[in-house]
Length: 162
Image 1 (cartoon, helix red, strand yellow):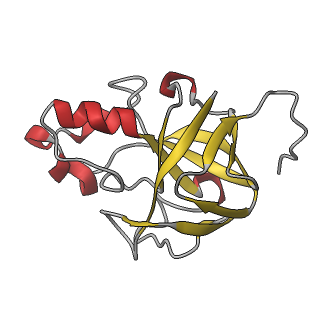
Image 2 (cartoon, rainbow, N blue to C red):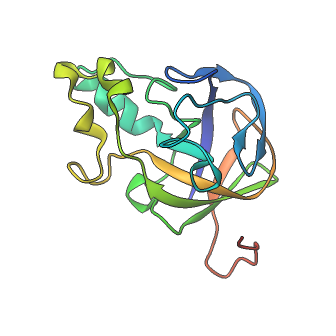
Image 3 (tube, rainbow, N blue to C red):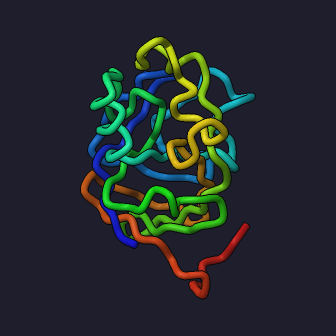
C-alpha cells in the first residue's frame, strides 16, 4: 500500500494547522508544531496525527467546512486504504522516517466549528469506524516533504521498535 503526503501541517498550538513544504520529524513530532493541551495531544505515543485527504473530501461533499490541517492533523495523505491504517501498522514517510500507528484519535470540541451541526463525532472511530484520524509514534526520525511517498511496511521489515 503506497500513498502520498499531500500536506504537512503545523501550528503554535490548536487548530487549524498551517501547511509547510517540509519538516523535520523527531520522536516528539514535527519541528515547529506545538500543542496547547499536552495532556491530550502530543508526546511520544501521539507524536504525529494523520488523516486521509479522501475522507476530508467526502466530509466536504457532506457539507462540512474542513480541509488539510483543519482537524489538527499533521499529515494529510492520499492513496492509502484508510480502513487498513490501524494501530500496529508501520509506514515509511519519504526516504527516512518510519512511524507506527498507535491509536485512533478522540475528536474534541476544538474541531467542532468545521462540522455541520457542530457534529465533530463524525470523525470518531467509536461512532463511525474508518473515519477517525490516527496517532503515530516515530520509530526512525528524519525529514519529510510535501509530495513524498508514504508506504506501508511489511510485518517482516526489520525497523527497530522502541
